[in-house]
Figure 1 (cartoon, rainbow over the protein chains, first blue to last red):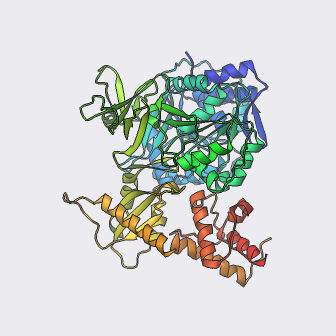
Figure 2 (cartoon, rainbow over the protein chains, first blue to last red):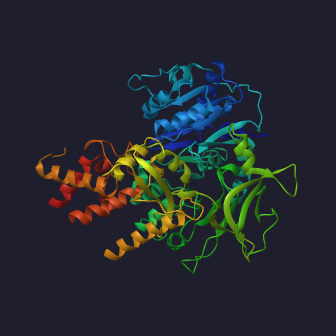
Figure 3 (tube, rainbow over the protein chains, first blue to last red):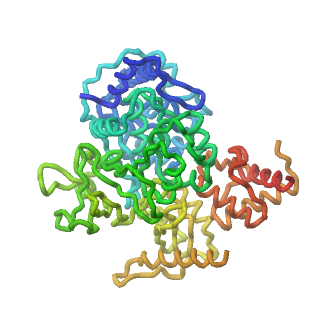
Length: 533
Length: 86
């Protein structure tokens, strides 16, 4: 039986002096990582942490954040990473839903946490301060700090738990305006890692990027996929995302052997031509997941990096990290050729089913379901949504399949192809966004009569743009004011970039907002602008 | 050190004007930290640089920009002033 914390402990016993985590100039060895995580776990257990407790992580991605994740798991608890860019009101909802017993708090997130507590009055968690501590805050006082961690025992805590225990709860956008918590067990992740290590040939000494933020499901692959295999985990600072050339420099200087990110980052590198011919000589593999990679970006990278293996990973958080993969063997000859989401990873099944829950004929676009070892037990304290998304497997009724909401087809080559979404969910820069969550937040603004939010595809690296059309109840209302107010409810990446005031929203025959019509209005306006330029 | 005179003040107003009127982003003040507030991401940065060039004729190649140049409306104004001097 292996858990996420035990696979890292094994590496620490084998090679205690090897480097585990690199953050700028800071390097943490496996031995020290193990020791710090043990001390933290012993502190938490000694202070009343129980198996199955939730512990909030409010911290940017730092070495101490990685220590915190491991320490929480060693204590038999599950961590809940909080998006550092999320507005306090949204954080409050997550805290109120998961009721953490402790919060691991970095200075950088202290103000966010303090403001969130104003809205999450039922939250009575004790705070472990991860930094020296900033100015005193109004609504909380840390109960513990790093000196308490240093005083706790360094021996491995004896906690009777197994691989069916909850490892983390990841909150994603919810269509009704309330974030949904996807529960992930240790065994869900370990199953994916077993496949990935074997397929990619991960080995001790590998230097792997840790690019997505911790509240992203993909970061689980970076963190445990590297530390469970004895590699070096290189934490990429989010500020680097602003500078394509600096990001390329970072990959070069750190001689990364594996890069894994959402496609928009790769397209950003291509757009600014930041990659040289035969660049990144140490790199063995480049992986992406989270949304569709534009084929021109792939062609750009494959031409410059002939020594690298390029692999597309696909899968929703509910099925843990990724459920299918496709390595592209030859440079695509056509810029419009779609990249398949491919074949299932070990232990997984991709099922393209029609409305009758039977396999759709080859080539036909139908609903994509996933079965297998990666399937989450469901949404945190939400049996209704869980029952709607995780249904009984028509072939084996005692097992479950997950309805992804994605549309797919099986090609003549036997590979699975992605064809967009059935519902109001979009992907923007790898973020999974329910347009309904944005609309729910807009509906709370008193000066809007009504509003509708749509995703409009673009050809460039912008991907899907979030566009909002609205009917104002106040003359002279500026979109800037709506945006400012909306930012108190949803994170920055959910804020619309295009705005359009209308006298009336277009409606379809059923009287509902006519979304395709609204999308057309935005497309027409963009086309007009391009003509003018 | 950032020189602050009437010229840079005008450039700051141009930058906050573009943010407000074209990108619909209200910045609390010229010193507000655009990075730590999470306001500026790569998408917006590229958009902002393009619009600054359209409005002022000053081109700012991304390769030549540092994080400190993008901290606030004030630092972006100073960056513009330096590019005009060049």
